[in-house]
Amino acid sequence: MANERDTRSLPAGRSKRFWLEHEGQNVELRRGTLVVGRSSGCHLVLEDSMVSRRHAELIVTEDAVTVRDLGSVNGLYVNARRVEGSQRMKEGDTLQIGQREFVLRSLAREVAPTGHERQMAETLHGDVVLGENPPSEDQTHVGDVFDVLGSVAEKVLAMDRGEEAERILSGVLQSILREAKDGREIPQPVAERAASYAVRIAGATSRASWLDYVVELYTQLRRMLPATIVDQLYDVVRKARGMHVSGLRAYVAVLEEQQSAFGPAERFVLQRIAGLERVVLS
Figure 1 (cartoon, rainbow, N blue to C red):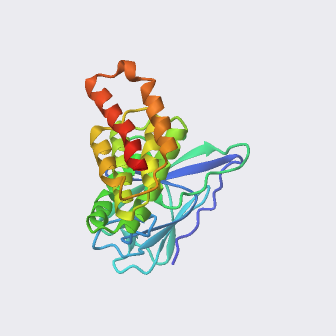
Figure 2: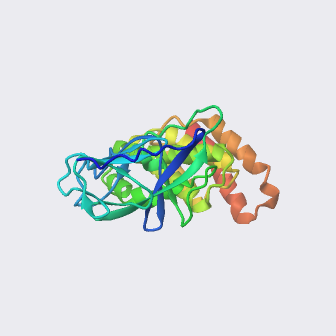
Figure 3: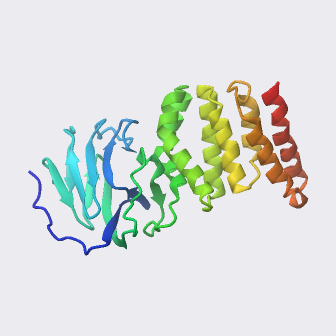
């Protein structure tokens, strides 16, 4: 039985942002329905033997979060009490799914004059934010989701299940690229990890679009690809045929504009990147 609904409403022109805190991580909740479970097809994947494949739903509106059990074996708990059916949550409530405990946080915000809200991404894989403070409205560190999905992605890639890895990681990889295009700062470790995963997915699926992704990401960042990623590109480019030479040339041009500041090691990496064109066209 659902708990009594909180009928208090927000003032006109106001809505709330919601996120879940978990061991120093902030999981951003966008408006819509979010499926949580052990299956890689869920929006939020929890690798936990006590979690069912499709364990629960979070229904997020502009002023509320409601949690619903999807018939899980081990149940769903809010403030240590098992949820029967669905329950509306409030600020500071604890949500336990399997062995994971989350705390619901919220922040009132002004609604944009257009009334147009960004919709929840296709998966929450691109919407996990780390840090002790609430996520800022104009910056989301989506790349940190790797800390949640990394073990799952590594397992499926090790089994050469490229399409499954692509499905798991595509959301976060595309979110990182969107942030780069928006001019937001992408930490180098996040960019490098995104590029490495993209090359590995290309190798496992033979889809050259993921090689183009790597080049486009680093073109937007105006940074030199790490030598290890360049080595990976050389290993995969013959298998994943169809990489766009035009994008590669544009990236090399961006780097050549900066080469006066490069040291010998960076100039060597630049030569290696430029040399990829011959491999692509061979």
